[in-house]
Length: 199
Image (cartoon, rainbow, N blue to C red):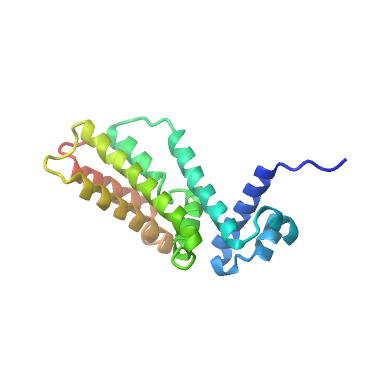
């Protein structure tokens, strides 16, 4: 009797193998052959699921985005407004091994979008979703009447987005200098500067 294969699980297995190759060896080494070997599959089996490298990268990046969203939406946030906001933003930062891998793969993917138009739409979608998530954070603080008066909320959302991206990149490139503690301290300090009272 032929072995039944869960096709969704197999695609996720291949995507995770893609992440592993990208993190360990870089995007230029993420060939179909190497990914297939890492996933424990033949090249032919991998091609059955993804006919091109772009298609494989697209699915791999969609999975990164989906996991971040699922984790953020499935979490029960507790504590003070500052603690809840910090915890929510940390879903977008490399604060543990799982999120470090996701962020590292995402930055590599983002560079690839500059030369592969097929990946550009996903990059724009994820950017917009991340921006909206950070907008939700700022608007939550506003709705709780915690923000200083006369802030330009659109500018503050842009500034927070740039800060999150910058901190993630600094931590990935210089983990011994821009350590986890410094990243969280910087984030907490920034949020406190937006608020009129201590949170």
